[in-house]
Length: 168
Image 1: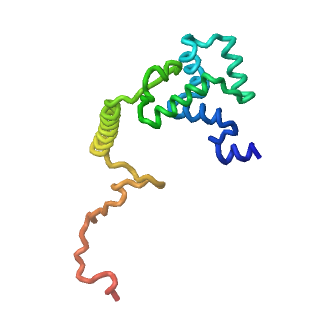
Image 2: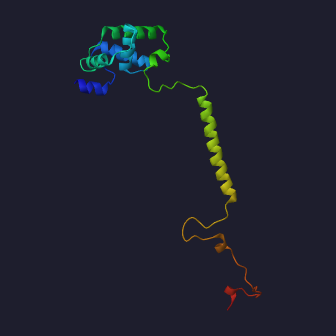
Image 3: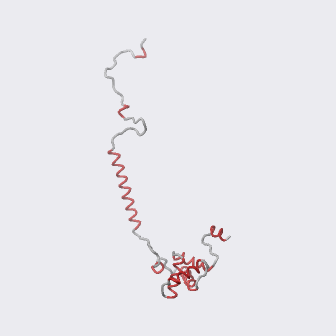
């Protein structure tokens, strides 16, 4: 039943403490383990050692055991978000991110300029090719040319007064 519920509701967490940590991580737009690292740093004022990292990760992921310092940090984040006092883009929360890209306000303008250049080059090329192309054969076989359909004037005009269908 738990597997089916997880499929239907992916953010469902059986443990309310893990749900609190997951909610705080979602608010900060980071992973749950990054939240645990931040909570450890705030509580102990040092980076989490390798030995502790493995132990905390295993206890959190396998046994659903949330350390008290992580619970307190997660509550602070959720309360600060409810009060509107948190900046989720602050570098403090994203220092464990590998490549964190923030929104660039001039990015949209650069995108529009690049798209305009591409459309201008493609459109200009199409117009130039349209006017520089010679009349060619048709697209489908037998590839007739306009010269094949021109009517030729007879070399000797027929001056007979009687039309061919009026002859006896």
